[in-house]
Image 1 (tube, rainbow, N blue to C red):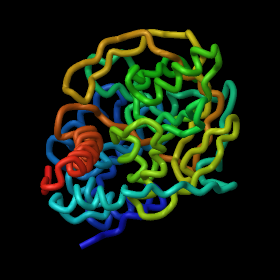
Image 2: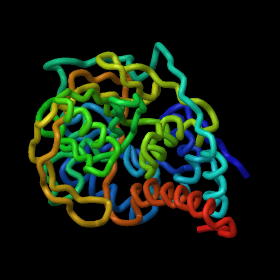
Image 3: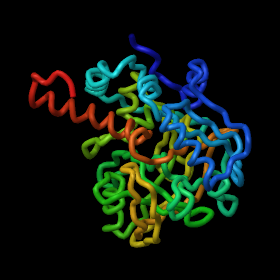
Image 4: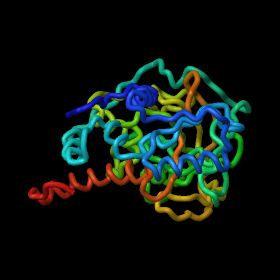
Length: 332
């Protein structure tokens, strides 16, 4: 049985979870240093509902965690009924990617904050693990970059730690496509434009987490997974396009040859990644929806969102590759 897979936005998916009694609102004020990560961890370990923290001390917006942290929600996001259908369905859908469609007016640009009014700590101020170097708003934030040579967009999820009211350390490792774009800009001595987005429809989340070959536009893959072109809007300060219905868009730049120490951070492997000098994302403008919600994640070993959205989607891509080489393979 195929279920719904065209989500207008994250809110529609949350409404769907409410019909399944699979979302929990925590109305009491919570502490950003201990309670958010502790409650989220318990939720992951127990395969519990998605969580909305309505009031995080010191932040102005609600926070969503554990969005796709269980098998059932991951499959619901794709409109798939059971794991035995997953690999075949993924291969069938992604055989042909669907180009995104540009729109001029977008919900993600309803509210604009710029200049000295930007304070990242008021948006997401969570310390996700005991020994993290500080707050990490970038646990599920997607970095959107453009290859300076081909113009192809890349969407990748990389850790980002708050270094100042409008500064984030950008932890994209050298082997990632986003960092390779930056290396190309840096070799030219040029500033790289970038957008960082959060609170997007779940097919965007899954596509951005997938290990893909170079020169794949993950937003076209999201279109293929949902069976309909994704609506995208051009940023206000650069020519990068982002999904029109995401909750927050951070527009900014990454300067060449500039590094600041960022981390450590509790990684999806269940071990801490070290503090290291990383490029710096300078936020020049924040656009958002009215009454937006921030999307975050506690990284850890399985069960976790990384284990599902990175692990399972990469499994499907690997299965597709193996099956083309060895036609007799039935499943993986």
